[in-house]
Length: 199
Length: 370
Image (cartoon, rainbow over all chains, first blue to last red; front, top):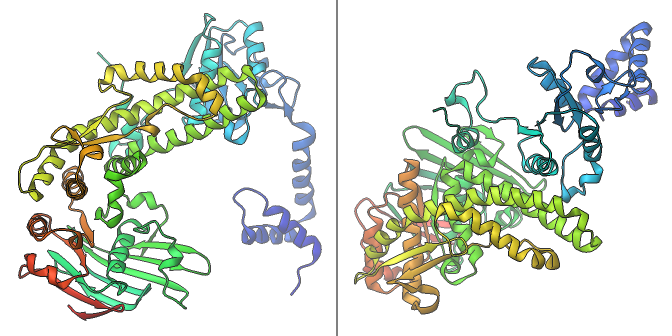
């Protein structure tokens, strides 16, 4: 049996989504086919508005519906501290902890010469500009603990070496609440090598 | 750990071979090209999912067949049945432990430890430094996953750094230098961990080499392995040395767009009575050293992992004089289970074969006598 063309196109488009295979795409498409028109128009509107209503914050490059994002415009936020992250999803992760009340800066990538990413292709110039014009006391580097993330942290730390800024990197090691026995060898191994003195 | 039986389907010459093994020594005897080494190859697949001689998986499929399968029965504290299947058409290799599929090859590293002594081992003492690094890395990685991950990260850093070096050379752009500095710092950090692990390993491993070497030699000799990072062995001084050498070679590195300094260029030096083996060693000393290294690896891994590896020995007796063959066969008694291939049955006379040992004769992929 041949599938009607509109349905086939939808299946094809849905299967481009991350985590969606051909079969799931087909199930979703058939579900949409059976759904009532109201739902379909709300869904398609909400997808469209992603592109029409959401844009990048002109200061920190977070996502926002206004010129400047909620975090950058909030008077309750501590403006002396800035957390550098790779991607928007990292802001969401840090925000969920409710432990951080400073500002953010989204780099949009990390240094990776192998894939051709250097300082000019991520937002380091913008970070320098913000630091120069702002009144910051501390930079927190919250990049992934892989070689690319580490090197990017080192690069940024060097960049501000001459300034009086305190530069920190988020700690790594054992997950909270987890038992030592359940952590994988590599995590424990590095946690032991990077142990901290308590007395 | 003991491998009690194995089954081979469409594996090179072996269309359908089933073998029960002795928990002691298993001598596999047959002429050239009859399928002796194939048995070792199959055992190695079961322990590591990889090919013994780094050949393509497709080469192990019997002529005119579409897949191969090897199945093994391991006995330790518990029993495990492992199975490996390779399909020629899809080039897909699947590995099962107790019929549960394993997706990451790294998850079985160290689970079924194996030590091999093969013909190509001559490269360890005679070949390039890379051969010795490969040996050391493979031993440390089997008991330290932390080391393995540092090694992988270090190699990635090398690739990034050389890409950046090429770019700087190509564009002649000095504004990229601060980025190079950051990558250099990562290189030093990862490299230091690798050097520290290697220093500690060599320090401990020497004792094992010495013991093994003197077990197979007539008169007492003093073998040793020496390792230093650019002439430095003191842990506290290595970082300074590393950074200093990198600074000295910066111009050279930029000109050649290559990583010139770091543990990826390390070498391990072998000595006998303080004479360097590479320069002064006789053929016999080389051979003895190669054998001693593998025996040392066996006992070292046994101590570190707390489980006994399998020992595979491919056609080593052929090259040895009767006296040393006898000594090695005696030493093999201390090992536990081993698998030894031999071409020449006359050699068997000089080898001590015990009641619990097994002699397997193979002809054209078939067991003629076991």
